[in-house]
Image (cartoon, rainbow, N blue to C red):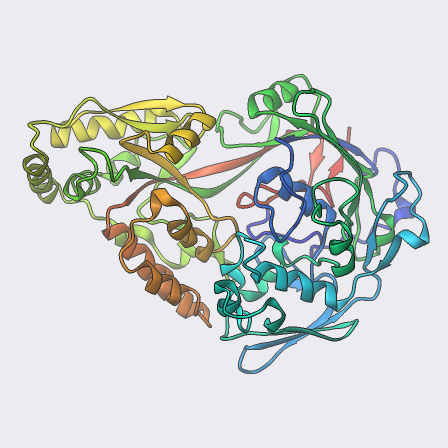
Length: 544
């Protein structure tokens, strides 16, 4: 089993030329997977959905112009070929003519000819217009704002029809940009760039992506049934291999995907223990290789955030004192393998031009440990706040994200170095989100993660999440990040943004955290994107 560092489309550049006629029992293919979704998908609209359950289904229903392999290299998927103008501002794609929309109107095993029709260039035009349309409120709009007139459309100053996307004919798609973008091709491999058929969208009368009669597939699997009763227990989402879209270079190995919709991860873990399901995703590091396949990715940065309205931690000098007194070098020798110390914001799993950003930019440059200055800041804070000591405070922690023992080691070091005592309050994921949104915390260990595999997506969290919205000059920072035409410019902009955010002491990075895909030993090539949370079963093989 292996992970993909970029959000992938369903096609990979690997040697998978096994014809459908060669599939035999025991060969690992034609398996029906029994697998979970944590919660009912909120929407199967690729331009809008951003929860892991939705993203998993979308990943297995759709495919895009291009795909990215496990090293971040881009190759054609539904595009037969493409060219880029010398100035990097015009992309011209020639589409394959054998990628089909499949709509199972009768919900049976046979797809009739009238239920299939070609995916054309206008389907991509409409999809990208929708991403930018402010009426859509797509969480990915800013990522695609490099498209010509994108920023004006997002602000409402221009119509979505003015976006620099056009279809001269059914097989030709032209995308024009306002400025070159070093990460644009990677964006086109992501789910928000998957096609959307204009006529079908409007035929659903506002229900697009919300039930099994309001979706179509152009990817590896098509929808058979989606049933969800919030008060029931037999909730399922059932998909079948789309043989109309199987070719020698676009192979789909499983025959069916049988999703069971569960309320929480605890129920999913129990089903896995009882061998009722074959894999699941988790943040828990309690599963180890040997008995199971365990695929890990350091895709999350855990850092301290502070409540501006808190009597103590509304004070910047106190935040600064904790940041300057955090000796990560000492922590590195005593924490568990599930996490590593973090000096920066962008986690190691984020890639840029096929390389880990953290390999390109060492986070050691952000080390700010200075005990003398930390003590000075603490005294200033206590005087300003009017307290003699800092104690009886607890860090709010999502119990699923980290072993509290590792945090206690940090708390002990603060007590020894500064004479402050800060405890730990473990809560459920649901309670954590509720307390954060309602401002019922003093300080919290916040899991920072981008929705897409890009530094930009990580940095966007500082402009869209209220609890992280403490960055002076953030508009200028985002302008720089959105105007990176080369890898070198992107590296410089991301490094500068990391430094500015860290020096503001609104977010104090502590650890890089793993996300996991756990599966039974008889499975191979289940692909996991830790950013969107999507699990891709297209080339999965089962040898049970």
